[in-house]
Image (cartoon, rainbow over all chains, first blue to last red; front, side, top):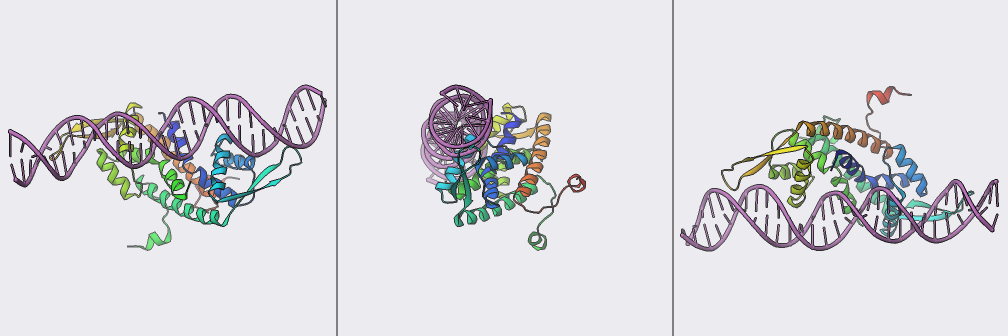
Length: 120
Length: 120
DNA sequence: ATATAATATATTGTAAATCAATGTATTGTA
DNA sequence: TACAATACATTGATTTACAATATATTATAT
């Protein structure tokens, strides 16, 4: 139990949310996702990503289509389903609420949203 | 694999961070932590909390002292060690960086820090 | 006194998920 | 034909949150 473990736990928690976000922004295949996540300092390994994509596909949130590659085997390009888009909206709300809660808890005085600013 | 699972994953990721934050703000015993977490919409069960506190104690981040209660058995009041305070600062930095990364990734145009605003 | 309720710490077994390592398959090149 | 690069996929181990339950202490009611 060291601090790096806690740090990676923190990142794990938002993996699915981030991956859904990436796919919603446009068709991608797994290597694209790995690269985009790496750019955001949120590293993910293929052994994690493939089962995760399969779970999301089986849950009806994603679909994929095969696309021939000019160099190598065909690629699975993933897209969001309507159900996936709805799920992402829910997760976006959860993300905003959670970050707000955690920032309050850690007394990190962060900019508050308009609705919160005017309430009570 | 439903969306509630993904939501709870998101919350799990910040459990240790939040608990360290609560303890840093003042001596508390487990029931205090459960209550404060509940107020922040981050529910934690005793079966999760006790092993977690033991892990953090064994890792040298926490200490505790027994305090007699006027109604019921004695309580374990937890406090941060110097090592724990240092670890919390690291996690606070990780939290800020991660939320910034995720907000960028999800195209949630959030206020950017000074260094980012002036860079490039 | 004794039983019960309330409070508090703690453990056990199960399920889920990430990771490291490895496997399988396809395409282009030497 | 062999090898390297690319891509999808699985397996076994480890971690950890949770539900259920166990153990212990104090106050209260009978």
